[in-house]
Length: 462
Image (cartoon, rainbow, N blue to C red; front, top):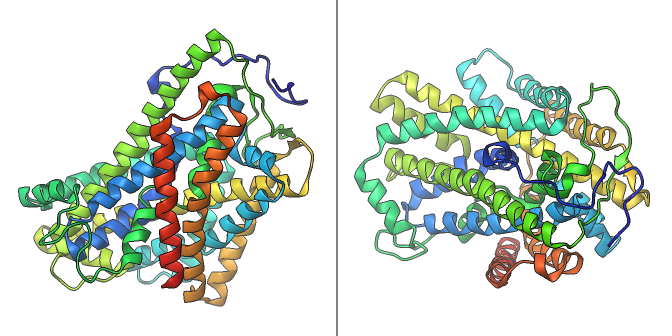
C-alpha cells in the first residue's frame, strides 16, 4: 500500500460513504456537453439525411464503446483519487508528451466558435463575424475564469445548456416526425436500411467512421472524465484538492498523486457501491441522454431534409431550419438555429475546458518530477494561450487547411485507439485483481481497439 503523499488532503485510507444518486449527478453532464455540437448535432443527422436511419446501429455501438472507456477511466480515479494521466506517467515517462501533442493539435482550431458566430450573424447581419467569433472565445474564457471552483462552474453551465436545448429538440422531433420514421429507427438499430444492411451503397466510409468516433466525446477528451469524478469528490477523489477559478483567493500547490484505499472487507463493500453508482450516473446522463440526442436529431433530419440536396456543416443546419419554417412558422426555424448555436457554444466551452486540463497537467508531468503543482495557474495559462491562438487565427483570416483537418481526424482516432489499451494496462497494473474489469468489459475494450485501428487506417489511407 503506497504511503500518503506529502501535501495531500487525505485523512483516511478508507473509501468515503456513497451519496444518493441525486447528489451524484453532474460529472457526465460535462462530458455530454462536449458531444452536443459534433456527432449529435452534425454528423449523425447528416448521415440520416443522406441515407436514412439504417446507420444508427453505429451510434448505438459507438456510444456504448465510449461508455465502457469512460467508466474504465473512472475506475482508476475512483480507486486512486488521481487523474488517469498521473497514472499513465507511472507507466512510462514519455506518455505525457503524447497527450500534449494529441490534445493540442486536434482541438487548437476554434471551429465551434466560428460556427456559433456564423449563426449569430445570420440573425444580426450588421455584426462583423470575426469579432463575434472572438467575442464568443472571450466569453468562454470569462465563464471558465469565474466561480469558486472550475468544476462547479462548468457543471452548472453545461447542465443549464443541456436542460434548455434537449427539451426544445424533443419538441421539434414530436412536431415534425411521423410513426414511419420511428419504425425505420427500430430497423436501423439492428442495421437494416432501405434495401441494404449495415452500410448503404456508395457511402464514404470515413464519414461513418467519423460519426462513430464522435458518438459522445472524442479523442483524449473522454479521459477528462477522470478529472470530473475526482473534483466531484467521488471515491478517493474526496481527499484531493480542486482547481480554483482564476479570481478565487487562496490558490496554492496541491498534490497530483493520490493513494489507493486499504483492501479490507468494508472497503470492498463500499467499492461495489461506488462502482454501481458511477456506472448508473454515467449510464443515465452520458449513455441514455446522449443516445436519445443522437436519435431525435437524426430522426428530425430524416423527416425534414431526406431526399433533397444535403450539404454538410452549417448549410445542413440552415436547410433543416428552412424546412421547419416552411412547415410551421419562420419563428420556429429561427429557434432551431438558436438551439444549434447554443449547442455549438456548449461544445467549445467543454473542449477548451477539457483540453486545457489535459495539456497543462501533462506539461507538468513531463517536465517536472515534483508531486505538487499549482493546477489553477497551469490550467488558466493553457486556457488563455489557446484563446489567444484562436484570436490570432481569426484576425489573420486563416482558413482551416485540409491538411490540418485530416491530421486532426487521424490524431483523434489514434488517441481513442491508444486510450483503450492504455486504460486497460493502467487498471491491470495498479489495481488489485478484485477491482479490475471483468471479461465482458475486456472484450468490449478489445473490440473497440480493433475498430479504431481500422478507423485510423481508413482515414489515413483516404
